[in-house]
Length: 298
Length: 90
Image (tube, rainbow over all chains, first blue to last red; front, side, top):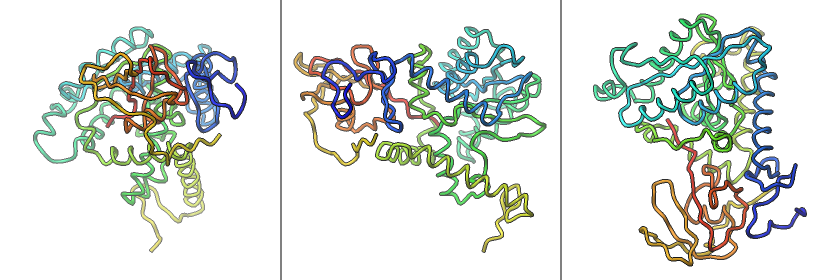
């Protein structure tokens, strides 16, 4: 297609690399890609993240936190595809059944199917087994926000199961939108420790690392990858999702991303830079101390 | 490439509330909640249609006659469109 001319009616714009019908317009880089080149592009960017941040080491046993939703399903598929077979890296999957009626059954079925299809060891643990109660029951009993309750118990379930499986790192399907939302939420809450945390992953308790190989891929591209690769399924939304602060922040940053393409990436890059500066300050004897951050600023 | 879609709030056509009965001469839009709407308009791009539906193009994927298309594709009156929302979660 000639630059500056709109695409013709009827056909989609052409892929910049091969001239086939495009499936995706990258508004940040200003290019159209067909299905094959889009898949290759996403895989290349995830490879680049894995290498650039040394997220996975030779001989490691990695567990994907497989909820059965689009992000974790794509993550498992992608890692299975791009991790070199010669590196001695083994993959497993852990699914946490929180006990949310009308929601979890469908995603559990997807998780089971996906793990079986890829030949990956899969373990399912439930809040009922670990905490003696489903999330629905915890919410009905009152107290904390469902997302806070869920987060605490889910992390514990993943940590304990992963440790029992001899896993060294848990990979989660957090995408660029998730990370940008987290940065903005930390600002809104005035949570400095959260703001200085690395978006790519962090060391956890007992040497178990948490890694986020998709943290540079926008949510729409994760979903599109799943669709083109034939693994995307429309699933119900978590009934507790709509009430969270995250939902408001999501709408805000999604709108900004549309009006000013690249906003999500700039938010996360900015946070990485602030995190690196804080780390350097800590090493120099500290403007900031670790833990729930205690600023010495007035 | 800079595409400034943000401040355009005109209607490139008009929507018909389908209620399951969309006329033959209107573009059919299948939404994720199962509803079907009709759209009257010519040479409309996907992003224009989405804004008319009050949907953020960054949060949805659109397919035409079963094939995924980019948001700057120009649509025709006889196209059958499906909108899949990707932005949600906890």
